[in-house]
Image (cartoon, rainbow, N blue to C red):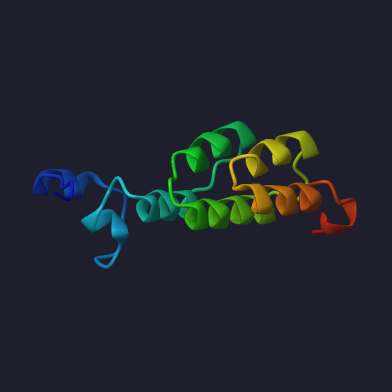
Length: 106
């Protein structure tokens, strides 16, 4: 059975469009991603916690890629911690990008 919020609780959710996944599944990965995308954390540790909460590996990978794109000069060790939240193949590719200085232009 899908989880739902009382109608009053919908009024206090962040401004989401009517077609937003936050309306139909406020605890789902797409809603978590939407919130992450709209207000990305400035700190890598907070970003790691946020993406770890996402269960879907594709959604998680998209969030990691977004955060790394928005933070190209992240400390490589912090970037690798974010990459470690991904599945094995994506984890290795992500870590190589984070550790490649020529990809950190902005």
